[in-house]
Amino acid sequence: MMGAGLRERVVREVGKIIVNKERETELLLAALLARGHVLLEGVPGVSKTLLTKSFSRCLELDFRRVQFTPDILPLDRVGGFIFNMKDREFEFRKGAIFTNILLADEINRAPPKVQSALLEAMQEQQVTIEGHTELLPSPHMVIATQNPIEFQGVYPLPEGQLDRFMLKVTLGYPSLENEAEVIRRNISGAEVEIHGVLSRSELARCLEEVGAVKVSDEVVRYLATLALATRTDARVGLGASPRAIGQLARCAKARAYLAGRGYVTPDDIKELSVESLSHRMRLRQSVEVSGEGVTVASVIREIVDGVEPPR
Image (cartoon, rainbow, N blue to C red; front, top):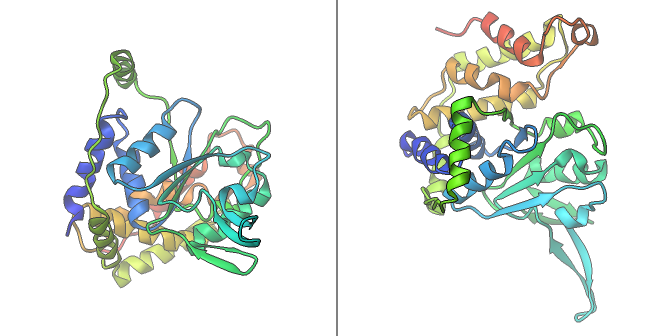
């Protein structure tokens, strides 16, 4: 099983560029191996773009960055038919989404029409325009960024769109020591080379091996019990969907694989629960305005702690 050392190699290479983002890097890798997408949230300047580019480079995957704006059109990002003047016929032109890793920068600045155009691509790994279907490359992963403090000129992502993201990863400010290291690297200006750690054939093998990781009946029941608990908690207005729990299970398989195991444990579920569920769940309005500091993440942690794992 190749996963045992893969996490360490990827974290080491990304760490040459990004300071102290080991967990965030591991979450990106787990989502990729689970064939999922990631929503990166953070204020400007916390290295969301740089993290994504460095991650793509060490895996030697095709990478495209798209800056989303209010005037963007689906044709620009997804693709569509254009008239070929030379051949006098319409032909399909592939959009930027036809890549292994797409960085959808500031996705919440795109209008609803563009956001909805991404739904099929993210869920079905294909694009259909006017009855014409094109398969996306494999692997295919959307890493979308959004700024949590901006409200001008943005379109909040609808629940259906949010539910397509396997994980929501939040990037905060660095600690004093880490920021000092960031400043040192910026001052030095030294060129840093990232080495590829995985070939395309090796990555394909990893994806197959992740699919073979076992999830016992006891862990499946634990997941179902956890899902029910999110829907019946008095503080929660919108609990975890079946898609959310299914994606949590898939991501847990990838985490187990990266730990060198061929089976999922309850700890895999617990470690991923906040990143997997926080963007899909909603608290009741009365809880949000209570002023008691209750957040979706804190409620998820309490729910997970309250569900007895299988022994």
